[in-house]
Amino acid sequence: MSYKERFEGEPGSADDRTGLNEGDLKDSELEQVLSNFRSSVRAWSEAEYSRPRAAAKAARGRSWRLAAGWALGCALVAGGVGGGVYERHQRLETARIAAVHEAEQKRLAVEEKAREEEELLAKVDSDVSREVPSAMEPLAQLMAEDETQ
Image 1 (cartoon, rainbow, N blue to C red):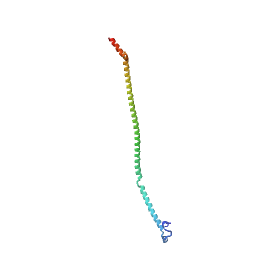
Image 2: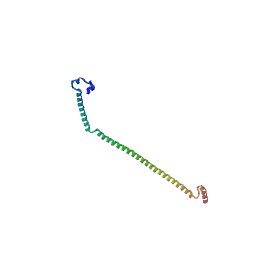
Image 3: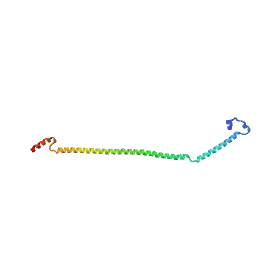
Image 4: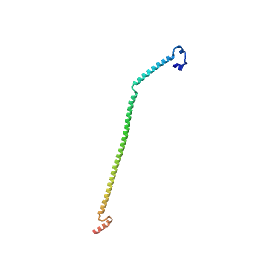
């Protein structure tokens, strides 16, 4: 059954009676058209196959993007780790300075206490070195005046 019989008209039309089989002509034309289309598709495929691929260029660009992404990621990680190390160093340095300051304060407090104890001992020495206690000093002065008279 031909294309025309199938879609356009009824079987047994006037063309069939003339002896010319229009279906055979249409089939041969269809074969010719399909063969031309097939050769065009093959030529196009061959041209596309031999053409340099855009994917290779994209892959090259993508590899640079990938490398740049890794580099930026590594820089970010290094910055984070470096920041952490710097923060830890700052804390240790602050603690060291605080310890030095505290030790200085303790040293000053010990020196102050030693000076106070020294003053106390000097006072005790002066009190002990007197012949008469300070409470008895007015009486001692009276006695010293009586002896001189």
